[in-house]
Structure formats: C-alpha cells, structure tokens
Image 1 (cartoon, rainbow, N blue to C red):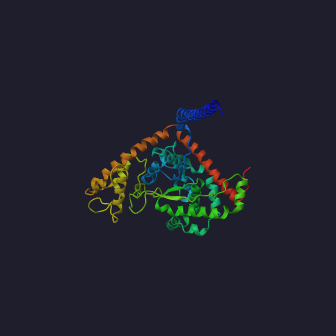
Image 2: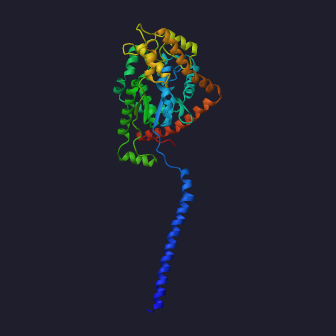
Image 3: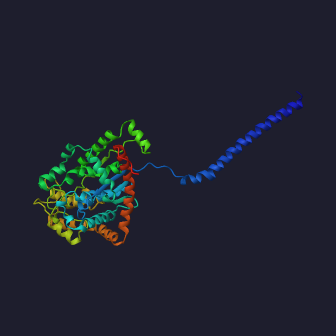
Length: 405
C-alpha cells in the first residue's frame, strides 16, 4: 500500500472515532439536559404510591348525653389517631336498643334520634375532623345487621355464654334481659370485620369482645375461605381469593383514661346509671358541673392522694390530670396533695369547666349550622356503605348465597 493510501486509511479511522466520540458526548449532554430541565422538575408532581394507613374503627352508643368518661376515655384519644390511621368512627345506634324494656330512650320517638345527632355533633366538637375521618351512623349501613346474622349462625352458643358483661347484667336484672344484650357482641364483631379494621381502640373491659371478634373471623375463614373451590368461586365472581376477614388487633387506650362514677369510685362512669349525680355530661352547664363535683363522694383522709385504698380520691385526681393534658402529672399531684376537699373541689370544677367550654361552643356551632351535620353523616354513610358492601359481598359469596343481580 502506498504511503498516500496509508495516510487516508489513518485519516478515515480517526474520523470515524471522532464521529463516534462526538455522538456519544452529544448523547450524554442531551441526556443531562433532558434530566435537568424536563424530568427533575416534574418528579415532585409524579404521584408516588403510598402505603395505605392502617384502618381503625370505633364508636359510642347514643344512649343519652355523652359524659366525661366517654370523652376522656375515647373521644379525646381518637383525635390524635387521625393523622396516622384511616379512621372510621360511627354512632352505634343499633347497640343502643339491645334491651328496649330497660331503655329510657324508647319512651320517646325523638329520644334516640336526638341522642344520635347529639353524639355525632360531639364527635366533631371534640376534634374529629370529617375531612380526615369517616363519621357515620351505624344503622345507615345495613350490612352491619346482615353480617351480624351471618356471623350469629356460625357462632357456638358456648362462646356467648362466656361473655362476662352479659353475666353481670343478667345477675343484676334477672329476666328483664333481652336477647339483644346476649348476642350484641356478635354485632360488635360485624361492625369491626366489615371495614377490615387492623386496630380497634378498646379498654380492658372490652378485650373479651375483641377476642370473640378474632375467633369469629378465624372460624369463618377456616370454614368458608379455604381450598381450590373457594378460589375458583372468587375468580368466577371477580373477587379477591384471600380470606374474607382480617383478625384485628387491640389498641389499648392509655392508662389513666378510665373515669369512675362520682358516687362510687369503684364503678365506671356510665350513662345507664339512674343517678345523674354519678356523671358529668360533656354538655352540662358550668353551674351543674360545679354542683355535681361539690356533692360527689369523697373520704375522710387528710390530703388528696390517689392511692389504691382511696378510689374516690384517685378518680378525682385522674379527672384533674386528664383535663389538663399540657401539665406534668407529677406537678398536678404535688399541687393537690396538701389540699383538703373544700379547697380541691372548686379547683377541680374550674378545670373541668374550662376544658369543656370550647367543646360546648363548637357543639353549638355544629348544631346551629343548618344541614352541616346531616351532610357529614350522609357522606360518611356513603363511604361506609361502599367499604362494607364489598366485605359483605365476599362473605355472602363464601357462604354460597346467590349473588345479587
């Protein structure tokens, strides 16, 4: 090969390498520009799949006005849950009629209706935000009653016979106890299982009912949701093939939120107590609160110390600390330990009145805004029905019912 041919061959190779290098560098530069100018700015607006929040469900019976025990033991503890959980809070009006013979609200057609609306309004007044949590009325979701019947048919009577609360009620009321009171734990289980709740805020006195819920879920899943036939059925109906019910876990409320009766420091504050003096209702006016605290049961010991052998003193100190959540509990105890009852009771009354005042004001605002509360409950009922119907549809299919046409 002549020297000219070699020269042009070398030039050709260099040119090719130069072109390839130019293409590579240009591609890298263009990629950097596209990433910097186009992709990076839109990353914040690209939706990123978030892990669903754990779902919880809880509710309070609308049997009369909610009292301080309901508020401190449940409502006030629900409020901080809203940011970390998918919350469903219902007014459990079906549970309010478990024993109509002993139910004072049945004396008036308006009694249960007003109590239900009042309870829902107090949910909001206490800090439950309808934009964060689902608030609804239990009887507005018919799936509660239907699933309760399906679960009742799978529940052995022996399980119900072990329910401590029914035994206690029967011992005190004798034959005046209705079947609804016997079987209502199954309805409670249906309430929880319909929404696939992972956590259920309960006190220690409700632990047995939650364990029944777990047992019923496990029994149903074992009986109806196993084997290839179940999976084929689900696929034919375009339903998920995993078991219908999730076994919920207990979310035990914090210690110290258990509020006792003002007339008996060993019994819980209760709406069913015939004595109004036994409880402070959240909507009680200031003068009534002051009178109830002034007349509440105390003891003859010196100083205000919440020891085990002084249940009334312990209860009143618990209330005093609970209505001042921003203060250190030990600081509160030190403040009152050298007081006598005549000095302490007015101080306690003032603290309770001051704590409940903004809740009462917000309650009046909610009830006074025409259509607002009804709208909240309507939207809540629609969302609840959507969730509950899916679970009920799966439960019906698993048991072999003909799908709705």
